[in-house]
Length: 528
Image (spheres, rainbow, N blue to C red):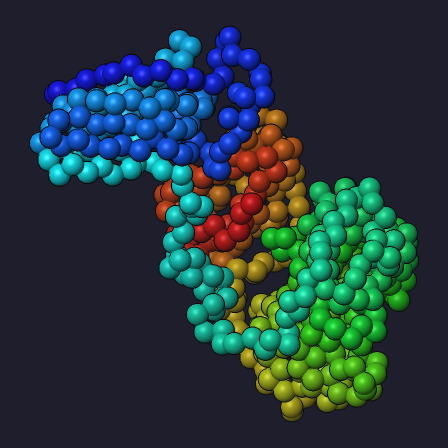
């Protein structure tokens, strides 16, 4: 191996003895990305006849694995090339233990120096040309396996390859601004007074113990998009959330399909108190969970012939309710296309009907595992309830659906619906806290809030049914220091790996088991 090392003058910031001066601070701040790149300058010019290179002054950022240093080398000329007729590799080297110790290392076999260094160029002595290495980077995205993502979504019952086109009128593009509310804010007041048409509202909460406790109904009166990153909990016998007489578009969804409207076990008892209600709205996409209400879990209501409740896409998980789990009613007029394309509802433990359709036409709705526990039907359709209603029922749940001749009814076994990734089989409780290592009971719970006060390892069971999904979260916000490891029993894999880690504070992973067998084959379908 042939090489040489030539000392060059310049500054290395920051080291003992350097002043926190305006000059030093502003020079160091003049950067456009992170580390291990040439910010500007330091161009290499090859003199083929002389077998030397000149390197201009400039600025680069060099990392030693823990610390990053701003390096400002001055111009230098006549550095000899070890391979004057071949390829030479040019490194900038620093010694972080010595103030302003900068050198250029040039070799013919691309061997990085022992001290912190940054390769800045290759120099062809024969051709008299140089090629920059590690210039200021463009924005980069991590490796994304699109085919694997498509396969995972398809396995979860979401065909993203043949979805067709979306009517532009369904989507509002006039987003004015983002409004964020924390649990300490007055959600009722913000929604009533601070929203304008087209706003994006983010409702932040932690879990059900850190929910927005509202003393009256949260009433939306302007079209907007609403993102629930947690829960809203009414403190008394009134409807939690209501969209009332709105002529416009809504998009309503939680982050990671977390629940967003819940009540205490005894907090809502009257039949008129519902989890989520719409009146006279249209062009809506709603997704979420409603649990523990004395009335209906979700009540879509069209009470006027002027504003049709139409073009609605729904995706709801509904727990115990005193009334119907999901009720759609058209008092007058014609509620066309209610539940729209790819509508999906899953209901557990409603005291009345699991799903009730009253009047109006509806098409292409999927019901997964609706259960009427109060002696009524899992599915009940009134007069005029619509065509093309698709129904998937877990065998043995509830009573037989009540249907009329206008409906199209498909009843499939549990083997067929397990592909959907929703909570097939017996109803599972929403959330449990996990504070120690061991196997996760994914058949009893679907969301695990995990202690990260110390590192833990949690295992997915080898006998988990195909289609089981589970959400594992860092509950304490210390996963960056105390990683949460997720592995499988047996020979199962997670995205092809034997284990994965949650290493970001308050991070989460949503996992779906796409095959049966020893340990299963889990894929990541959601993450922070």
